[in-house]
Image 1 (cartoon, helix red, strand yellow):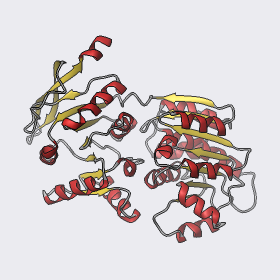
Image 2 (tube, rainbow, N blue to C red):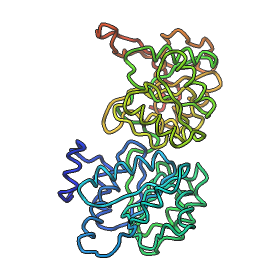
Image 3 (cartoon, rainbow, N blue to C red):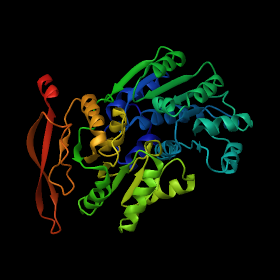
Image 4 (cartoon, one colour):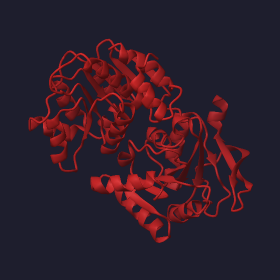
Length: 415
């Protein structure tokens, strides 16, 4: 892919051998200086798709440029966690380039960020609010930006950041390279992309309606009051090494984490009302294995990238089908396998129907569990098939667990 030796050396250290589809398509485009419209969901490797070529271009420019450092690349992203993750990627891929980067976000003191800015940086990763604050205080000047990346544009819209995004764009040089990434392309996002991109090349990889091929999905029908007991029942299985548990609300995340802690399971919660220090501590402990379970809301979980995450558990099923795809994409990343389990109470059956419709496949239903709901009024007219899932018992001997696969008649007819 015509990558330079300092980056190849860093990629080798990271254990990278073959590019993902989006990396293979996007890196040459970015290296040529062209604008890019990338439609890619989480877990496809898009961070490396823009970080690697940005590092290469800036490294080559650095050899001929003189004078103080100026911010040449800006990556705008919706959440603190995702900003930190992107920063870590730039650090890893750019280890031998001599380029400096900084991550800025709100919720923490700006003093260390300001001190770093005064020393000069090449690459800035930022969330919209803190970036605008620092611009207004004249600590950040965007006039030297040559490459602008807008990451997770659809999430920016969901979180109400589009107005801030437009403010940032208005401060950028008119002549620049723009890389635009979004998992989905609603009308508002398509309109924004059209307004800021100049004759872009489009790369679309793994549409949002599809789920990671190696993520095994299953559903538990359970009444709402039995969800805590079912969760504890599953987590006591030694086959689950680590689990990211999703709840719909911040209060729900705290409640589930406290319940698990009282039951003797190492767990913590991460959501928007927690301080940045608390969030980073919980995430760090989860990544290092000090926590078995991290309970999160959707917004807080955006950007969580944990190697070898074995399970994602939807304690509350999301009412937006695309959110389900994003959630289960936290496991089965970078070609690894994973398991996504979802608890569905009576009120959530309609959400499951919408998810089945979006992903165009049925999700396995596990009936052989102590809290199986007897209420089947909304799941009649399904076709049943059976298959087995192998896990390990206490003696590390394989055992078979029978799952039931239910396919809606309409979907069956369509296939």
